[in-house]
Image (tube, rainbow, N blue to C red):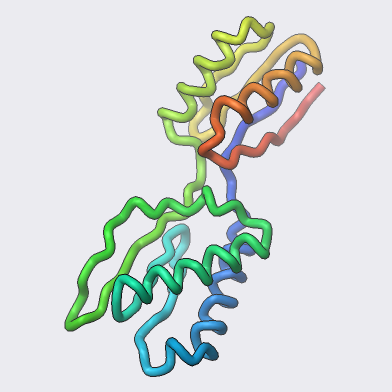
Length: 162
């Protein structure tokens, strides 16, 4: 029976390369001379340090440009954390790299497929959603439907089987 998996899986190697390039550019730019601006990556968590909120925005602009240049979708970056004050006049912001489909998005995918009248079934399997059907054309239509319904997550499809 044909099937595919909908996954949310960033390329962490390219994320690390973008962070390294951002750190290199921060070191060479004149407007960051003498500041404590830096970016750190620990597993799936980015931490941006700076002297002010404005400087954090500048570092984020550089980071997002480097990610885009390396073909990493910026929708993987979850910037919902607030900018925190740390010792003195320094601030930091924690950005998590989304990996794996959360339960709300998985349920949204499942209900969209059920409501579409396509002859496919969606089942949530951990942090992926497996879609099975009898015809390849139905699966391709389901892929197109998922892309339009869940536009806020950079989903990819793998494990396509006949």
